[in-house]
Length: 405
Ligand code: FAD
Ligand code: NAD
Image 1 (cartoon, protein in one colour):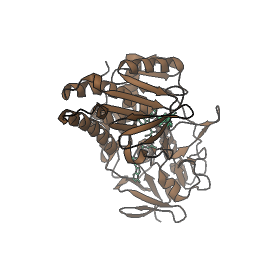
Image 2: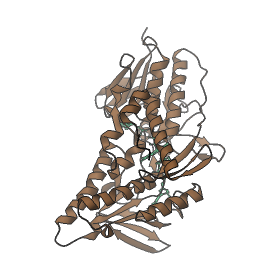
Image 3: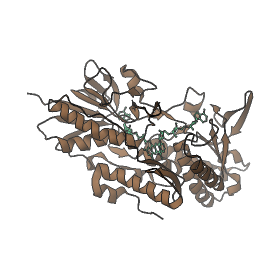
Image 4: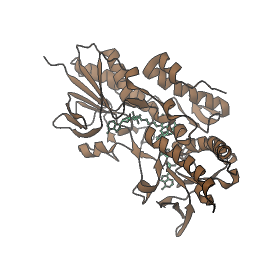
């Protein structure tokens, strides 16, 4: 009899957790496991703001998928998924077609542009290793070019960050550390550089603890960040952004770099596949399956779960994606064994820590508020834990963060 085939799409937090747990749970005879990913490496999406600012080299944020999978149990296919044919139980990739018995969709998120004009053409997004490398290089190019121009264009040195959610704030924290280095390297007067964060809501980090938000804002302002709050970005052009100020007023800010970090949506392949979705995220059942599809699991940023305590979706996070990966693996193992008794998933939120650069952060961990070096220490512990969960101590030694103070 043919072994059931499990196909896992995406080697991010959710996909890799699923596969590394499946390879522990199941013997080689039980099922064929195929992991499909665009690149032959996994990247720590949660560290991309560092690679984008240039405070951490992009090779530090990625590692080879072959280093963490057991190749006697898992076949890795480096391919880009192009379509998912639900009814035909088939995945179409640029390397050919793959049939599946069980499918795990863990293809992550895309930046949400809300249809705002000019963003796709002119703004950078912190999405993956390629885009992070491009942002770092672009900012550096602006500094280098500035010095070659006889007629100085100071606006070249303005960086706009759209969105003061966690991604925007973490990126600003890194910029705060990186810009003084760039000024030194390119002999640029720091007073010429502007970093402006544009946020639509009336506060930065909307919904987070107000005392910690106040701390973060003060620390970032000290690093030279200007905040334009309650001013939604309306349009991006080749060399500026337009922001709404009040009902009728629109202000144009000229800038050499625009980075859009104002939220995410799921992977567009979800929409293409015709699975019922909200902004490319599937409102999954408690057992992590897509409603009406007993052999399809959707996890990570492609999934949507409601926090019943507040009747709002859980935010898409690595923390939840990894926890889902563990349960997803156990549920698939149960189905393969012929059991219909699946585990229900409930996120276990241990806290949230937002970095403000190499040595500073804010956070709430197990209900306790943290700031400064304590919070920054905790952030690195969390980063190292994610490595440990997937690749054990050897991955932590290879890729971990050990500069604690
Ligand atoms: P991902 O980890 O993004 O992985 C998706 C994978 O799918 C990638 O390997 C990608 O290459 C692959 N893929 C995509 N499309 C295709 C395709 N067509 N074909 C083949 N492969 C494909 N969350 C936290 O909990 N804590 C944090 O501190 C935190 N910090 C963050 C910092 C930043 C800068 C950002 C951007 C996000 C942060 N998040 C954080 C959110 C977190 O990174 C995401 O929630 C998490 O990465 C989602 O995991 P995932 O497995 O769904 O997708
Ligand atoms: P987000 O949704 O958390 O924040 C987006 C921000 O952009 C909001 O403050 C929103 O008001 C603002 N915004 C929306 N439209 C705008 C406009 N037109 N003009 C200006 N501002 C606008 O999204 P994110 O920061 O991209 O984070 C994505 C996910 O990743 C979230 O779930 C987040 O929790 C998670 N994340 C977590 C961490 C962490 O835990 N340290 C770090 C980064 C990201």
